[in-house]
Image (cartoon, rainbow, N blue to C red; front, side, top):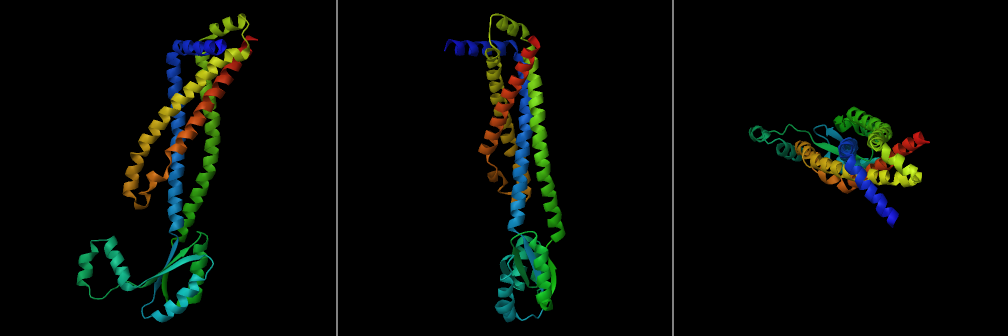
Length: 297
C-alpha cells in the first residue's frame, strides 16, 4: 500500500514538474486521436452511402406505347419476379409517373396543367439484390421482352465505378490504420520521452537508492494512462462537435443522408478512441522509460 501511495505521489510530482511538456503531449496525442475519430466517421459515411445504393439498386424499364397491359401483368411481371437476382418488380403506369414527377419537381405542375396528353411512358422498376446483377438482369430483360421495351436505364457504369472506389477506400483504410498506429506510437513515445528526459536526475537518484526498473517505470506508465485518457476525452468532444455540426449540414443537403447522424454510434467511437489513447500512453511510456533506463546501464 505504501509503495502504491509513493508511486502515485511520485507520478503527481513529476507531472507538476513537466506541466508544459505534458501540455504539448496532450495536444499531439489529441490531434492524432481526432484524426482517427474523423476517419471512423468517414467510414460510417461510406457505409451509409453504400447501404443506400444497395437498398436502391433498380433497373428502370421504359415501355413502348400500346403494349398489352394484361400480358404485362399476368405473364411478363411474374416471369421477371422469378429471376434469381430480382427482389421486387413495380409497375408504374403513365398517370402514376406523372404524379411522381409533379411531386418531385413542383415547378412542373403548371406545365402539366396545360398539357392534355401525358408524354411520360409507363415503366417497370426492377429491384436487384446485388450491384453485380444489374447488367445481367438488364441484358436478360432486353433479350426476353425487347418487343415492349423502349429503353432500359440502371446507371451501371456509375455504380461499378463507385463500388470500385469504395473497395479501394477499404484497402486504403487498412494501410492508413497501420501507418496511424505506428506513427502515433512513435510520436507519443518521443513526446513522453522528452518529459522523462527532463527528470533524468530523479531517475538517477531512484536507481542509486536501489529502485528496480519497474518501480521507476510505474509513475511514467500511470502518467501515460492519464495522458491517454485526457487526450481521448478531448478528441471525443471534438469529433462529437463536428459530427453534430458539419456532418448534419451535409446531410441536410443530401436527402438520403438524413439518417447519417443516427447511423454513427458515438459510443463506438468513444471506446475505440479511449482504448487507442490509453494504449498509446502505456506503450509510449514503457518505450521511453525503457530506452532511458538502458542508457543508464
